[in-house]
Image (cartoon, rainbow, N blue to C red):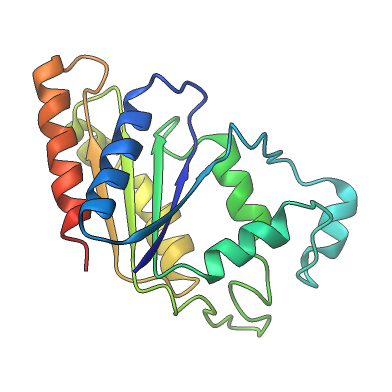
Amino acid sequence: MNVHLIIDHPWPGSFNYAVLHAFTAGLQDAGHSTDALDLNQDRFNPVISEAELAGYSQGVSLDPKIKSYQQRLSACDHLVLIFPIWWNVMPARLKGWMDKVLLPGFAFTTDQVPQPLLGHIKGATVLTTTGTPDAYHHETYHDALKWVLCTGTLEFCGIQPVNWLNFGDTGFAERAKHEEWLQFVRSYAANLA
């Protein structure tokens, strides 16, 4: 299985990067091929210009990176997104990746009722971190990210099932808890079917 991993975090020393490394190790344990995209290291510009917006409805992007990003997405069997939840959603680069890569004619049809075009991707795993406890995030904010990303974007484009795993209290948890989470992530990835 070919797994495409995308991370959006500005600091390579973050727990998000530790999650990326643990997930990649688990995939390698199972013999899966991996393709990791670091949006910050790649200096991806998430902003859509006026000129780019003019081509959006035709599925055209002026950003030279987009065609490559689309090819990588087209080649994968499973998608993994890793990022911190900021203001109940993803950071700007990942949001911009969605805006610029998941174009009409590529990710969904241009019909009045759009149909998904990425059904070849047999699932996605979303791994997030929050500063608040997991239960607080889910209950108080009503799983906002689930509706925005998992259902409203990935499933809309045909990527199913989507499994969202959040590591709450990341900044307050003890090192032993971080290690426990990372072991879980590696095992999860190794057992990904």
